[in-house]
Image (tube, rainbow, N blue to C red):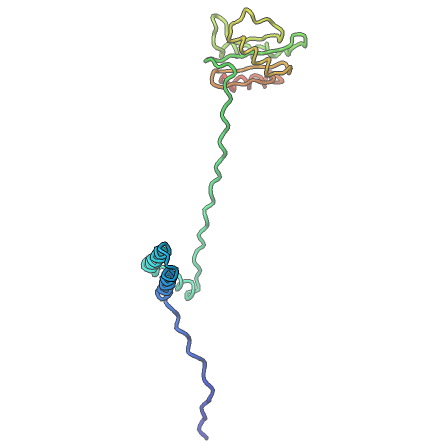
Amino acid sequence: MPDMIPDPSPGPPPPAPVPSLWDAVKALAASLWLLAQATSNTAAVRWAWAGVKGAHYVVRNYAGTLALALVLTGYQGCTLPVIPWPTPTPVPPPKPPEPPAPIPVSGFRVLVLLESADRPPTYIHSKAILDYLDLRCIKEGKFPAHRVFDKDQSMANVSKLWQDAFALAKSESKGVLPWIIISNGDRGYSGPLPKDEASLLSKLQEYGGV
């Protein structure tokens, strides 16, 4: 049997050596240094040196971790766990400041402004409402501080506190009656009278307590 003649065609070239991580870092550092020298810029030199030190720190501290990750993902058929990006907790917008108390004097007080000719609602004098007001309103002399005024009533013989509250209700109501002012000295309500006894009692309890 004749001897086999070797194939004269050249075989595949040997694989190029894979540069190590350290080789890549050294090449990066050299490039940064050359760039800094070419620009003759002091700031560039500082940035280049910072890049070299940063690259050295990464290799020194994380090369082992990176190598292990490459082994696990490339040679063991594993995938690294996906670390979820933390979802920021939405911050609620700040609450608007409470409007000042309609009657800026300590104590729970209530004023109702109405038009007597319009047959005002009777529930403002119901037992549940009057019992609550008598119990919760601060006493002025012997009487609890809740008042009902007609919009055209003379205020000459009442205290300045009620004169001011009357003027505020008349100004803010702009003819929308009945109108009520509820104040505990810190916060309060100035607006249309609630439509029924239950709604009125709930609004009173919001500022006067249960």
